[in-house]
Image (tube, rainbow, N blue to C red; front, side, top):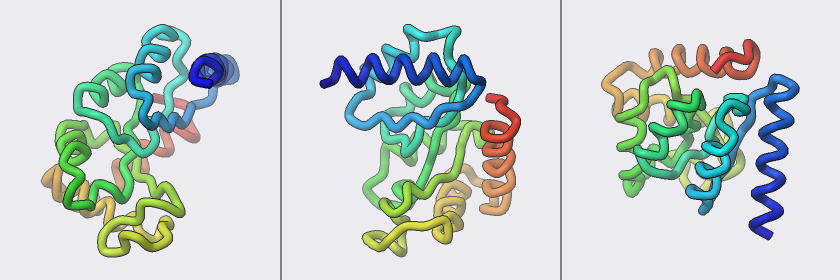
Length: 155
């Protein structure tokens, strides 16, 4: 049930904070519930990434204020991904992580096929185009971001 999911989410967030590990949050069709719980837990948040981000620029701003990264994958290459493209334009590059969501959501030109990390250059190129920077710069900065989050525990 939704109540059990919310309770489990709160407990997992508390555990991650206790053991000093980042979280990977996949919030799908639950924007308000996810944000409400995260605001309620303020001070006990552990940092991490909002995986496969699909919400608005306003919600993305709230998450980065809390110290979270925004995960961007193949969807950013889709023609109909206007909302995500606006989010990427708004985000500071140092708050973005590249993602695949393997085996799903392969970027153009491989949409509909099995996704893998081999497709990340397409994601980096799309982000670079939206941000007005070279894809190599996107790769460099997002690689640093991942190292900070996963290996250094910094948000």
